[in-house]
Length: 223
Ligand code: DC
Image (cartoon, rainbow, N blue to C red):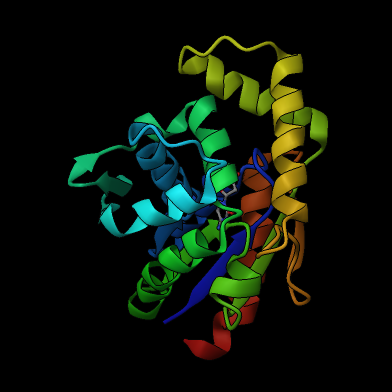
């Protein structure tokens, strides 16, 4: 199986890029942020504070997450309910970031991610895919985008979902989330030593072409 890891900060366009590449290559695309978001949603629904580590850990055995891959991409379920749309709010972003810093939460989601990669040609995006989840991935990318452009994209995305935060508010919450995601003790969002840096600020079609050329050159010997 061929595994491609895409890591980088929030709003860098990892999922959009991963989706485009998966379509081009006929691989599945696993959005691992959705897993942390779904744990965040379960915590929110249980009325637990995401800062209460012990309570979050105690909840884990009852959190049943499953993924399904369909023609239009990944579907995620919590206790059999499709929660794909519910996990995209700004509130759940913050829950996800907090619970993702708890080692037990990361351990809880580890095997699910590795199992998918064992059984499928996959493009997996997240924060620690190249460093922790798939250290032997054939290709690893670390996506970068200018801070200004990232905030603008995220602001547009939230506005399209009816969340009217100011650009300044988006910029502030993104900076807070990035800081804790990249400085936490466990699996910080940092590039793997063998990751290829890919700037996604400019033309998207060009980013896709560049990524495809790199993937093809690195995987030819496997095919
Ligand atoms: O990619 P995203 O914004 O949907 O991710 C939501 C949160 O989950 C983010 O704050 C960091 C965390 N996350 C993580 O710690 N590890 C991953 N592989 C993916 C996401």
